[in-house]
Image (cartoon, rainbow, N blue to C red; front, side, top):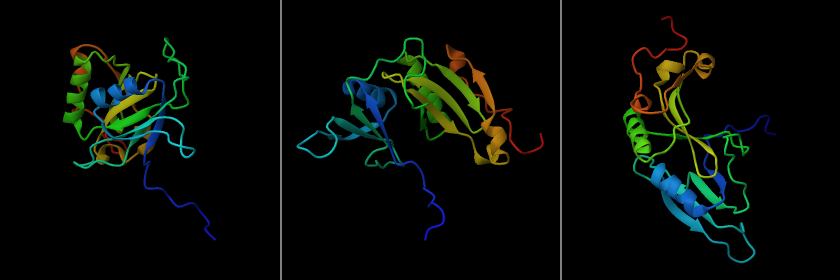
Amino acid sequence: MQSKPVAPIGINHLVINVRDIAESHRFWTDIIGLKQVGTFTPRGDHGPRRVMQFYSADHDGRLTHHDIALMECPDLPAPAADGTLTSAIGHIAIALPNREAWLRQLAYLQDQGVRFERRVEHGMTHSLYIRDPNGYTVELLYELPRAVWEGDIQEALNHYVALPTEGEAALEDRVEGVPVFGHAS
């Protein structure tokens, strides 16, 4: 008899319900940079009854079957105009390969007129939060080196420095003076 669960190796993919699949496709490809790898079209009596599209990130030059899938649900309510939570998903975190790629993505998003909701220096990541057309919060991040946070994960999880979200200051990223958790300063 198995006495404890088998530990997973990670999250394989996420399926997101969306009102307008074409609008969401543009966000996830043109704004975030994922590549569409497939489409499911309902046929007969098997499988979901809704159109789905599948997207992959770049995994060292290789695609996966999908990291994110969109499922069209036209009856979903529109996102709240005041930014209040409209779904059970807190946010979707997307990792960029490194700091330089993340900074290029921030500049691209700013050039595209994407509203930066929050910029945060976390203890483990530096992050930007934006919204997709359905109101889901999307966190774009790069991870700091393990040596920065592994000495005290609890303290790193609680580290939060809010940063500017507009203008040139929203594109700056501090590398000097970043705290190292669990080590005497």
